[in-house]
Length: 433
Ligand SMILES: Nc1nc2c(c(=O)[nH]1)N[C@H]1C(S)=C(S)[C@@H](COP(=O)(O)O)O[C@H]1N2
Ligand SMILES: [Mo]
Image (tube, rainbow, N blue to C red; front, side, top):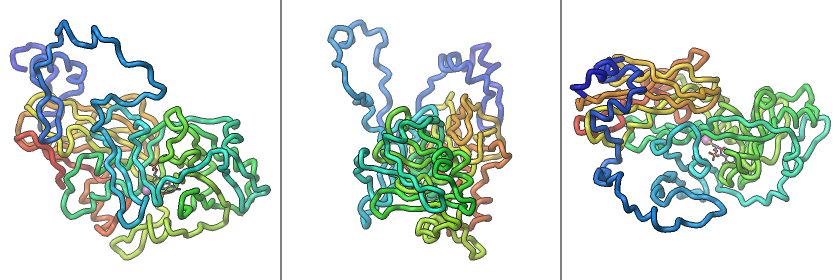
């Protein structure tokens, strides 16, 4: 980088540890032309070959006819290792999770085939022609809807994150877990969901003024059911039929699921079958024995619906290795169940100094926001952190603060600041710092 007159200008530090003013992002060409920047790779992976000659006059693709058309496209065969990590529960068939590989993705949309999964009893095989949604209980007239009938209602599309209440729960462990970021924080994904606003269907059924809740049930084994406040259902919930433009994937609730924007995953009942309107919550298993949390004072938190603001740096991140000192784009994701992300700050010196990351458009409520910051790694050990603030003014807490508040017996709603340590050999690990 030394030697270029102009580079001095863009390399103004924005904070400690090599964080650069965001103008550096606009001048990447300049910086990369004079430094050997390398994308981080998984530890142990061979270095990307530098030998491919971009001017090779004889690549086979120029002289051989290409593959024929395909009725449904698949990712490149060279990307096959990009997959969900599966953590299934050996004792209960079909119970478990699979994580979105956040470290391998860009932008804000999660490809449908990489959306995280959380099934309590596997993915049911549902015949869309037989499936019905029923709205009953405290209503003037109980109604049932076929998929065909729902298809005829006016629809809405919304870009929304969906996060399991148990996401990132390894953060409660006494020792920092060493896993790729997706296998730690990847029980969150972001899709465009399209479907029928539930308020419209509730109005048709005619809600009794006594109704305050709906017990929402899925058509999977065990008929997963949870209580959702009626006010939220009316406000912005959807009966989603489409995900990223196509019909829901079976794993995401085909042929229909409830979408509860910004609230914890469990409320987003898949394979949606029934809304039973009631005056009181059902106190079902998944809102009493599970999805509640014992606190330091011995009381339990219950109905903690909103997913609070959170952010995580996806690159560089744990288990990756920086090949050389020099320029890197620090990038990651931020989201808040209360609305828009207002700000993401990043630090390269463990939180001693911070600078604002650039928020990439669009910045939408209850949706992933991609953030980026320019960083010149000196080759010295560094600790990278990101801190999200949402439009309500809520600031993502340091781990210490969260643990002081909630104790360590918690399991759900872990949203503390994540710290990645970069060692002098370029390896990145998860630390509590
Ligand atoms: N019917 C049904 N709905 C369900 C579940 C389930 O097991 N059965 N899991 C819930 C949980 S805990 C979460 S986090 C989300 C996960 O949605 P996804 O698998 O589409 O990512 O679905 C929720 N809805
Ligand atoms: Mo969940």
